[in-house]
Length: 84
Image (cartoon, rainbow, N blue to C red):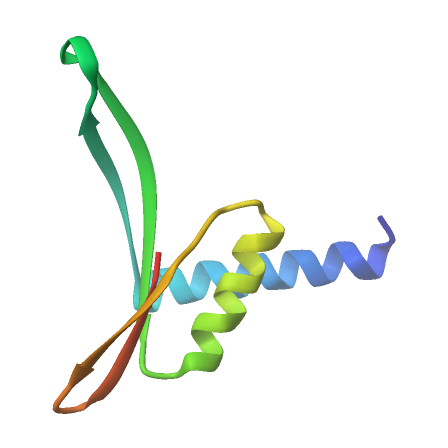
């Protein structure tokens, strides 16, 4: 990986961290499995009315091999787009 690619990756990670800090939430989900065992998985939610922000966050997360899905909720203030 060249220096230019590395700096772009660092700036993208910095941008994503800022978006998660300002517009997001980090949680730990728990699901019950067989034999009273639990499975834990981290979740990152980002909500924003600007679809471009959500799409950029999804692109960066995809480069990190983090799965995501997006949903839209209509409100009186406009559409809020979520990615998880």
